Length: 215
Image (tube, rainbow, N blue to C red; front, top):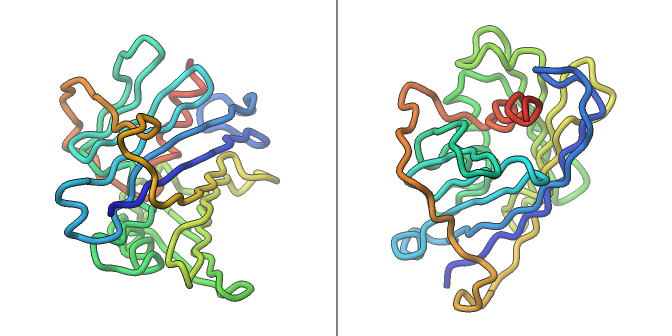
């Protein structure tokens, strides 16, 4: 059976926002699905939906990834799977640590891996001017992976001048959820032309911050 992903994601703004500087924190809640095997992914593919306060909704159904305002207007469109970068994707056949590091390498982003208290590891992404997204230079992303379960636990993002993370994602994994109960419903997205010129990277939360600041 495909397994479900339940996310409770607080978005904090204790530092500098890329667009406006300091801005009030928003609580983000979300849900999604993570198939643990390739076979499961064929019939029950991965998807993700995050709601940032009452201001933005991020959705990725595997075909497209969009950010919408409360009226449903699409503010940002990316190829499907873009918002799954940096996440656990066990159906692809790689350990989560390797998935994150492969995503970083694909973005030409430097990274380090540090063992923490067993069984956790931290992967730090350090984008610079040579990365595919040089506008992310000066930011740090930290991914904490529980190695025994082989799942991403948290992801944090902060600017070098920040004392605290600007964005923190904390993920809880729930198994054997009743898919017919309606609590976990895949996003029903409008047809939107994705920006095929964009490159999906694990630093995608940084692309959302300016949109949130402008709302």
